[in-house]
Image (cartoon, rainbow, N blue to C red; front, side, top):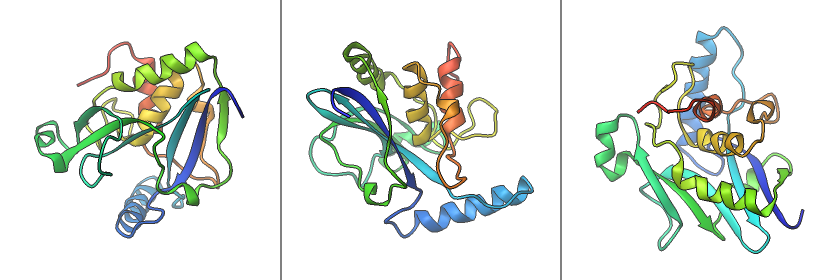
Length: 193
């Protein structure tokens, strides 16, 4: 698709890694057992936004271990507990990274879901990235049994752009932890701290 649009990619959690793939599987096994269901594949969402001239990667990622140089950091927040956010090791970054990379894109299941946007809507989406709620990664700020994480950022941005994020689901009967928290944040007037 040419012109202004957004691409939503579904990537298996832990693709290309060694630690996250195992810890996320253990987390899903425990969660599935508590909910009396079979474990499901876990996915995280990646968002690319095209304004007709440039491409931006929108992501929320740990503040440590990132690429050198400017990678479009526009906000940050705590991981685990608000007070832990004082340490770089317990802080996340929200990035609006022009010409950025999605390291695990080679593992995407299928092509992206594409959303055509007007140029004003695209610019508004890109401007909202720095306004994302800075909730604690891993917390359940809305009491809905869903944690705030990188998926929350993507669903929040889509929902606040007029795209019904509740209708979007990962492939392969998978689940995207944090997705419902982003929708909740978008539908509430004020987010919890």
